[in-house]
Image (cartoon, rainbow, N blue to C red; front, top):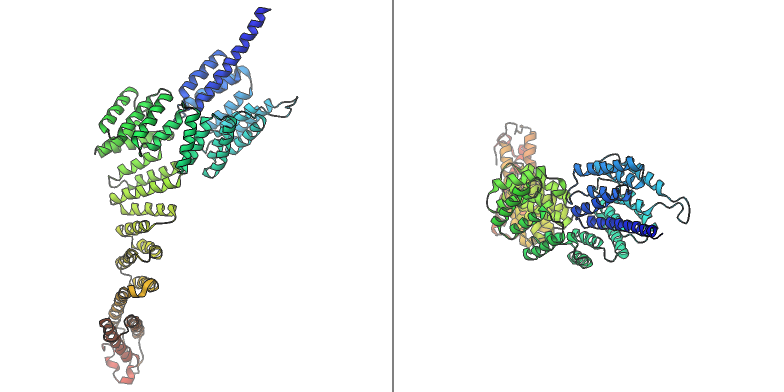
Length: 599
């Protein structure tokens, strides 16, 4: 009897230990300590390889990868584990969910995965008692976890959220339900950030020590550049659990380019709390670079390269590229950043890496197309508007320094369109860049809103006028642009711009005078003895009339007789009028034969 009781207590104790091991493994996965999680969950599996949950959670550790990427080998390991379990235990609900998760990771048929999820729900739905008709909350949560995993193209977050809501109504204590729900909302796009925050807040209500939920709220506010709130939630996460590694790495990344000393403190805390890993040495090399210790950084990178190789730690290539660029070895920098961006897993690549690629490639003429493709990829990697605008502007500046003005202008336009409201400097930069690129039509296009937004500044008028005069030989288009410019001058401040308008009219009247003199030289410029005028003569008179209109505008600008500009306009008008009078009715003057060359 005593022996039976002892065995019973031993069995209960063993189950509690296994449960504790699973809980520890899950926590380690949430803390991105995947190596430790795999070790804990492997021990749990080894102790009871016929326990469906032990199998399921070890498979989840495989599907978590190394914290940076999930390889085909990782997915294959999870698949083999779940298949083995299904062969030995039959269609257990936990293993069906695991296999559905594998299908999502393999990019397989979503409907096939959902069939497995629904089969698992049906198998665990209570058929009697107070919970009759209710699915198992753990299974629903696992389904939600599967659909929360991966990028926005993987799984069905809406389906997952529905299952998680069901789980939350059944299980009133598990915070993980709402963590997976928050992740799913984030997968659906930035516009769902508010719903994600609500979900994480519910997770905190269920577990006031949930550093993961606090951290994820902080990341949402960081994506919105809300420094006060993201630092508040990061601090909350550190207080909830000082051994939560992701928050220290996030703070290191944030301060690495702002306060390198402060960043170093966060890096040290990350290394102390995270799994021991060769990437920690990489982060040390990264810090040394940011501290301006390029030779020490390179030495650390080469040491790690010799120990594990670039394939094991792909971001070593980025550290090499940064250091060589700062040391003036652009060729070596180009080699490493191009190799990294061409071969590294997508999960390893950050938006800043593409920016580095642009910075390096713009030092080598002819690489504008590739550099532009890097910017496109960087914009896909960073959805924060302020970051995207800064990235585009930085790229435009790099193209400008490389004298690739057309590429600079193209990206600058995109940046301005994304930004929306432009400052005076934005207008100037955009218009001057278009002028440098000799894109005169675009200069004229950009100068118009520039004049409207800043009518007191001389630069937009100057750009408009210079681009108009440099735009080509289409004088009609030039005159049309000058007419537009003069109308703006008159509306803004006629007195201030009187002389500028007069000079524009001077150009126009010279054009018309030269034009009608050329018309007079044409062989079809004829007037018969009866006074009939050829089409050329009609064109001549029409041109003279336009010149008269310009002269009248000049006189309106300077109406005072005796003024130099008034006298010029009076003299020109009188000369033109003589031509009009002479050729309008040559028969009346009895001098039709001289009409072709008279003045």
